[in-house]
Image 1: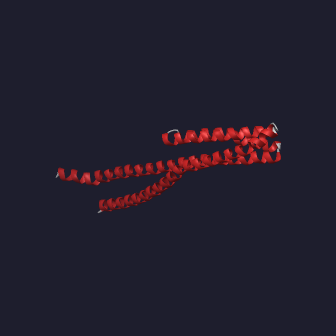
Image 2 (image 1 turned 30 degrees about the vertical axis):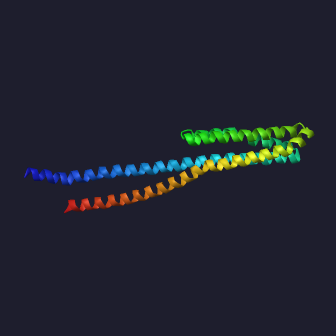
Image 3 (image 1 turned 30 degrees about the horizontal axis):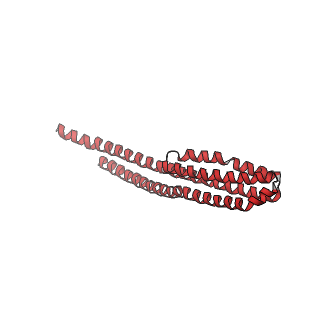
Length: 204
């Protein structure tokens, strides 16, 4: 008789508690996975935004430089200096984002080298404009422009390739997050049904 009562107690108390513990454990696991994918997607977006910011600065810097060549205005000169002055900080911020990814970090170093080369060429070109050295300007202009434009093309292409990794990562993370949230909803629904079934069985 005592054994039968202990078995009944186990069924009435132990089974519901065991299920609740299992339910909570699985739910926490799923929610943690969803949060992890959210952070991955957010990180990928930050890297993409950082890369786009550098591209924007380099392109706007080039536009300001060629506007300065055309107008010789102080405003265009100041605009160029202000724009390119932000590039090192932008690279530093992007480097901080990818520092834990050896492959991305190495790729970023290559991008920084290209950007430095582009800025050096542009700086030398601007100095020839600043000094009004017409002979040096006209002698070096065709080659300088070709090299500046060529380096800019390489840099922009490399930046696009760099961020393409995070574009795919963002898509994958968002897809996994959406799938995990579907599983969470299904698991919660299953838990509700089981709890209702347990409550009914206990009431009988």
